[in-house]
Image (tube, rainbow, N blue to C red; front, side):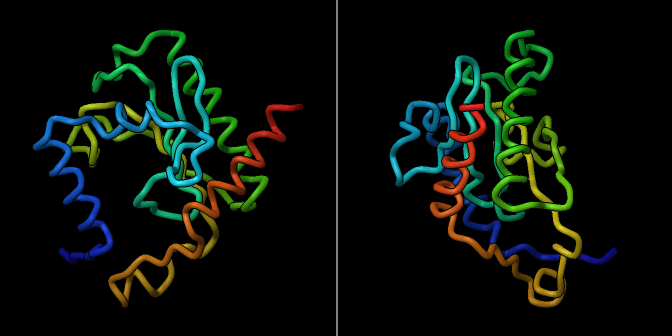
Length: 168
């Protein structure tokens, strides 16, 4: 079996460990922030969910839609939460297409630690824009993932796209 290393994820893992040790939920903390604060990665808030840029993205524009209610159980989501999650994933897809024109998307959730959930105690849904050839030689040969745009710059572009899409 071949192993591929992702050293850029070590800071993410350390942060998750620290949050788990302090019993603080990263997402519950993020839910209290203000979208208008240019220093955080929060993009959108609604009645049941909020949307945030992933601090350790797989690709430019990697977003997460997170229910406010703290639960790890997919089956506990209410009909209203499910509906809003889907609407927010659709809005995210439109906004990401508007600013970055990806060739495709990965949309989903990692349920449970064994499935790859870094934050397993609070369910959340990922939307990752994908481009033809976005797995290039850097992660394969250089053991590094290149994210070519600053997260706060991405946030500003997405906020503008969200505003325009909501005005329609």
